[in-house]
Every structure is written in structure tokens, then in C-alpha cells.
Image 1 (spheres, rainbow, N blue to C red):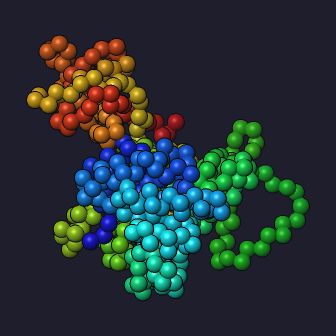
Image 2 (cartoon, rainbow, N blue to C red; image 1 turned 180 degrees about the vertical axis):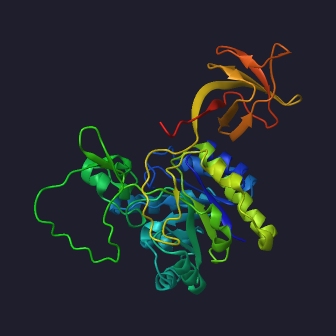
Image 3 (spheres, helix red, strand yellow; image 1 turned 90 degrees about the horizontal axis):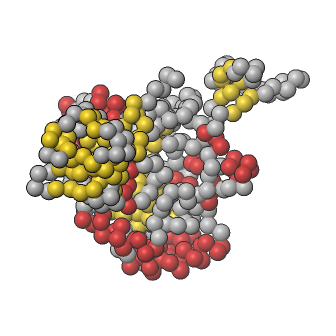
Length: 415
């Protein structure tokens, strides 16, 4: 049975992905992971993270996948006993030098995509060192992944959804070169996502095109000032929802969703969609069908447009900004939840009406999306509520005091 592995950048995201069917979660520890700008977790949090995941029957993998200098390697090695005592299941490592120490503490050693594993020979060597799993390079095709996995003596893992980096398996110096903030140490400021201006110098063109592609143009946009702009550094997000059968047949042990720095509603939505797709395939592979609503749901949360990365061809389309259908607008907070009548009392600072789609998020609640179909003020049904009011709404799922309330407002992507 393939594992669905989902990201958790904080406790709200953790609950959100577990509630939506994640078999396992991966998360960062302060100072040791590739998402230092995410909230992450401390050593003291790991026991709670592990306990919550166990309640859902899910496994837990801690990311320690930056390039480690001597100081950080010593610190991480010194923390392994504390990490192991939290009862998480394993570490995602970018440094093979720590495999032996990790395994000796009873933890699984998973090798990060940062190691750029591209062949079965590397996997055989990793097996000798004690690794249980390796995340394969993002630059491999599905045919290559299938071939390598069939020969592998350890588990393999692949990314199936989320952001793609312009560099080989995330190894990049652009952020460091421009800002002194190293992507390889988890502190990428993502200058590749900016809108770049192209200029051409006069003179002889000494560039020789040895490829079979005659078209050397990038997608560029003319501006009023006469310059040209492009996002050619910024690839679209990966989305493999249309290709679950091919992925399932590859023999890969774990399907990974990227997104520890993204919002809890992103994790909830993406995890839920892939959970349903995988379950539908397992239940009846011969009659499996892709549902149109899956893509609708995936485009409703943050995305830069979608591509299949290197799975079937070399990606060529570049992304622009967030292409999601909705903006998440902060409009209120939960005051109370009444279990007997399944209703939530909200304090709102924006207008609300029947038919509005809202999102409620909290550390224990996770992320819940709900369309309002019933509202009351002082026991009387209402269709509209003005900002500054307290209102009761019918809410079948339990929410909690001080949970955040957002309204989903349709975005105009044509503007």
C-alpha cells in the first residue's frame, strides 16, 4: 500500500493533513531544515507531534535536510537521543554521514531529495549504510523511476504535487548570490519567483545551440517602458492528480506532497484530493476515473499553475503569481461551539451572508471549509450579518474557541 506523505509547517497544518487522510507527515526542526521561514517545531514539540500523529495511525518524519557544516552536524548528532525519545519514526537526511548515528538511535534514515539520487547503484550503497528510504531526484522521468525502483533494495519516495525549484533537486545559489541568504541552508528568498527584466547587449552572438530545439525563445512580456519581462526562472507547480494509475504501478513506496511553507487549507485540500484518488484506485483499479472536481479543488488553493515536471517530458512552461481561484480574507474568530445543536458562535469583522464559503482554522481543529447555509442572531434566522456582530452558524464539524475564521473571496486572475 503506497504511503501518502503530507507536509506540516505548524500544529494547525499537522491537524489539517491528518484529518484529511495523510498516512504520514513530515515537518521541520528549527535550524536543520529547508524551510526556515516556516513556523517549524522545536525539540520540545516533537513529543506532542508524535502523539497527535499516533492518534491518527500516522508516521512521522523529521526533516534535517540542509547542508550541514561541522557545527550543525555536531549539534544534530547531539540531539539524536532527544529526537528518538519523542518517538517519531525517522529522519530525512541530506548528509549520509549521519545515517549510522540515526539508525543506532532506533530511527529510520530517509535520504533527502537534496542528495539527488538518480540510479539504483546509489540506492544499493545507501542500503549498506543503513538507509531505509531515499527520495528520488525530481529530474527523473516516470519510466526511470519505475526502472530504478524495481532494482532498489530500499524504499523509494517521489514528489507528486507542489512547488518545483529551478535548480537540480533544489541546489541553488541564486538567493545567496543576490541576498546572502542560502537556499541550501533553508533560507531561500525565492528570487526566481520574481518578474525578471531582460536586456540584450549589442555585439556578436557566440551562443551555439547544440540541441534539437530550434526555438530558443522564452515566454516574455513587453512593458510600457520598452523593456521585456519574464518568469523563466520560475517553473509551474507539479500536479500529478491525472496520473495516479501510472504512479501506483511504479512500485514507489511513498507519494510526497510539497508545501511545508504553505497554509493549512492548502495542506488539507491537496491531501484530501490525493487521498480520495489513491483510495478510489485501490478500491477498483480497472474502473478508476479521474474526477473533474479534483482539479477544481486543487486550483482553489495557492498554486502557480500546473505541470507534470519531468515525469513525461522536460517542463517548459513558466509560472507567474498565485493562480488560485480564491483569496482567503480574515473576517472573524470563533467565540464558542455548541455540541448539542452543532452550531458555532462567531465574532465577525466583515459582512457575512448565506452561501458564503468560509474556512475555520485552529491548532486542534486543523482546517475546515464550510458553506454557510444557516445563521441566527439571538435565536432568529437571518440571511445577512453586518460586521461587528456575533452570529451563530450551523456547523456540523466541531470547531473551537479562538479558531480563526476566513471568508473565501473569488480572485480575478484575468486582472
